[in-house]
Image (cartoon, rainbow, N blue to C red; front, top):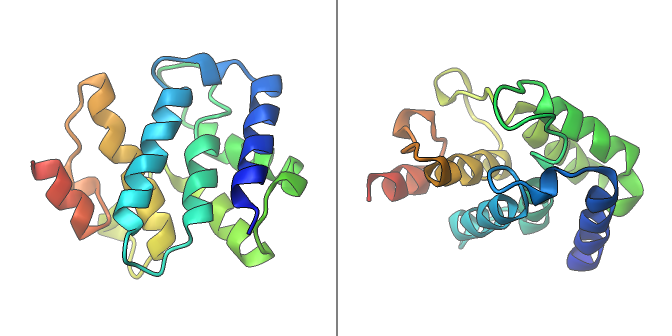
Length: 153
């Protein structure tokens, strides 16, 4: 697939539409780290790495501030819908991406049963990067065993 080409186009569009990509907390470096975490967690599993990459660059792109912005995930999902042509994903894959973005802030493993593995990896990849702001990820808030192990190191 041409995932990386369309990922570049998405990032170009985000840079046109927002300034959050410049943020030292929720910007480009965070997005790259989330992607790296996600691709690591996905190794050897049947997980769609294109969804992980898109999620990484999309999930925080509609933040309105660096602090409390609980609706940034749903806004990112709306942003994706408005730019559907930039995503080299099937409709089913795109719906998974939208669910990953809209739910990433409040998803809780204690009340989610049998959740999609790709979405779980997206959420854990983001949470593992909390260390950038001095927060040690809570293993009880992680969805994958690999992420829980990584967070104990």
